Image (cartoon, rainbow, N blue to C red; front, side):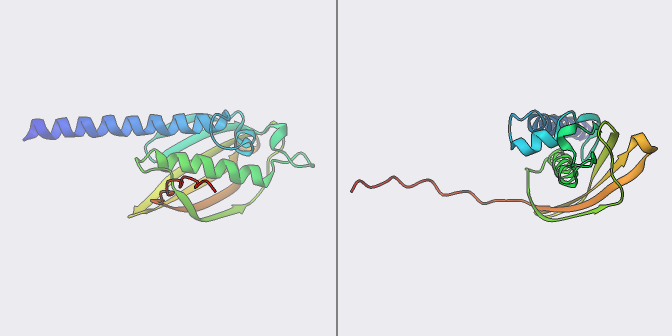
Length: 171
């Protein structure tokens, strides 16, 4: 019985590690524009994962010119995009599929300037059936860790499968 438990634990750890690696690969592909939209890759350009565990990601980010507003501040839309994607990767790392956001709340406290270094930390808070919650904090490391934004997000599994396209009848 004990050997079976150890084998099951080892298999579970292997699966968790594989899912974490898939999550990091997904985030890297979005960051480099391999998948997703140009807006995402522009907003995430230069993102570096510094710590990753199942349900948790910590990233460093240098605010690029492309993600700034006309005043040289980190654009709030770019902040929202990075929060959504880093949080999504944290959720994906738990073994759940990528999900649809059903509630997304961000509170902005301050900003960062071009070339400031920020830290983004995402944590999965809970899972209830098809719903998963997470929290993200964004801090300005260049200003001693000042809080830039905090967010909470609820996502839901999307089981929708689009119907197969119907063949077109010839007229």
